[in-house]
Length: 180
Image 1: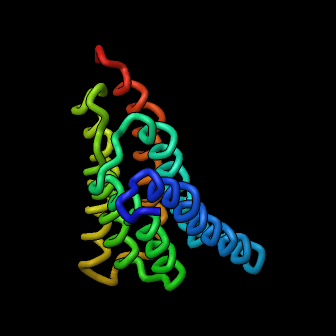
Image 2: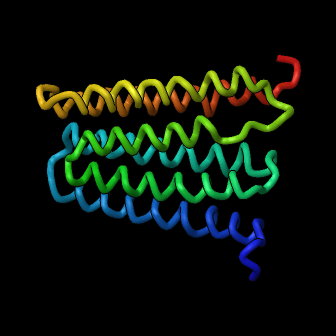
């Protein structure tokens, strides 16, 4: 394999990197849920996994065939699953400041991810910006002090998740139409 073969690297990212990190996170969550009672912490973990799954499905099924392979896209494709792994690692250590900092980075990477030329770019970028803004607000709130409850994390991660779901399943479909 040539190091410059972008198609092979894309296959590596979508066939091994994303599923490998996602599988290890799901395995860890299943052990945590079986070993303890179900609480806000577990709900936050599930939201993180669901954001990761929706992002993987969106990039792989909606964008993979629409975009050309480029070095820029390949770097972002590699960074997103690695950052999701770091998010989950921060979550297991209950370090919510790091969690929201890295989640802001991921949502920023998703925000700058290329949009196919045939789609309505303003609508598509507007849909991605909601989750990015919520993650920045949460990062700021958890960075300024310890007086915020860690149970607030589930509300912010849940809001990011539902904002991203609206983007993936509703706004993306409207953006795909050329006449919007």
